[in-house]
Amino acid sequence: MPTTPLPAVLPGLGDTDYARYMHTDTLLSLQKGPGDWVHPDELLFQVVHQSSELWLKLTRSHLSRALAHLNADQPSAAELLLRRAADALHLVTEHLRILRSLPPKDFAVIRTALGNGSGFESPGWRLFRSATTELDIAFARLLSSLRLTPADLYRGQPSDPLYRLAEALVELDERIALWRTEHYSVATRVIGHGVLGTRHTPVDSLIKLIAHRRFPTLWEARTELTETYSRSACPGRVPS
Ligand code: HEM
Picture 1 (cartoon, rainbow, N blue to C red):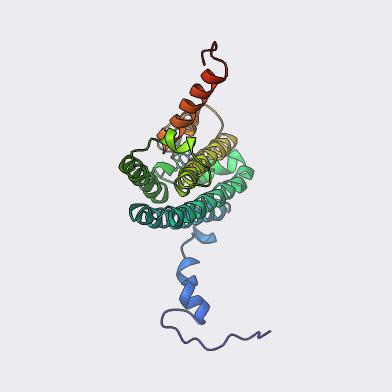
Picture 2: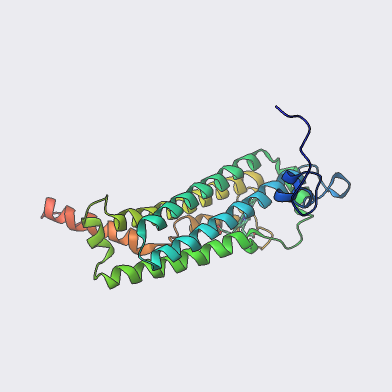
């Protein structure tokens, strides 16, 4: 195994081609240093947020590529990218876990360095949300061009590429809800219940967002099918 790096041949900044290609000098200079910290756990806080933004950037790019495949009538290619985006979102959710160990008294100090900054301003989440809206519209358009409703799709075969694509969208929606569940849990563990965030939003209002759906018609179709099939299985029973 070579221990000394080979000479760098790529253009750019850095001693090695690894540094030049990955832009590690720039990347590793994007966090506050010890001299600027109000608390040493600022590094943890920044690394979790910055890496989340990077994963969300990747996720957003995958959703845009999936949208292009969807519009080109290539459901299987779109599905693959959506599944990878859902995996990336799972990693973003895992990143949150490490913040659980932040003592409230320490986070209270970190908060003094945040100004009015809030997760509501996260560019990664904002772009991710707009990408899911575009996908929702494009998928509805595709189904309508085939004269299908989401419920028709779910009456078909789970191996059908369009059915699989719908399930990849549902998976993504579920991953968003799981992120929000973990985020709410971490936020209340660190700052408690009944307090306001930096955006003056009550922390408990985050719980309402967990039930929010990006692809509502795919969830409504499940309800519709459950009601229809419960009626035909037990004709006397009215679903609640
Ligand atoms: C110590 C950890 C954290 C705490 C205590 C916390 C707290 C909060 C609070 C109180 C809000 C409500 C808005 C406000 O008033 O600011 C919020 C919103 C939000 N936060 Fe965090 N947060 C934490 C970590 C994170 C991380 C790591 C991310 C990743 C980017 C993030 C992303 C968001 C987003 C996107 C929102 C908007 C609500 C939503 O879409 O669900 N937060 N956070």
